[in-house]
Length: 270
Image (cartoon, helix red, strand yellow):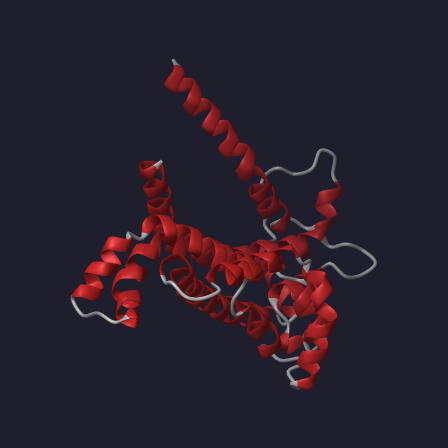
């Protein structure tokens, strides 16, 4: 009886969670005028492909998707690599000023992102990177959250004895990182990679500030243009949103096994 109640509760939560996504698909497959009906439609319509065609005709959505894939992939790879390197150093290597430097890195997380926009914009202009993808990629190559996240994970998950055994066998620090640290850090790296990809993919403010040309805009900026106009075309906007969600589902599918492995590893340790 208790197990049945748990399954019913989980099923109810799943349906409530999935309903916004389903209703977005319903709206994306309807004509905009159909949405004014009372009660609103709850079944998919026949205008999905027509709405998809209008999305690509209204804005350069294919180029925006490609730009977002480039920016998100580059930032995800760099954040995971540099954060794992820094986390390994802070968690397991001894050097002068380690604690003070880690506290400084963590302290930067308290500074609101909006405070850095103006000086960062001035720097980007000095480098003549305005309206290029470099202006979006380079400032986000590493972040304090990733460093702190990997430091905490490696401090607990990476046995010091394993590193000492590697050193006794003659492995240098860079070999220890590639052959010992990276395999241990894989579950946390998958979680950090997915969080970073989601964060960069959904970033709107900074790309809006530095990317002016339509061919350089990311998908979130392109979506904002679909919502422009005196009359809101919700079918058009939600069709674009559905298309922009597909790459996120693909990333989750690729990293899902590692995510579940990381969660199960944490549960066993707990």
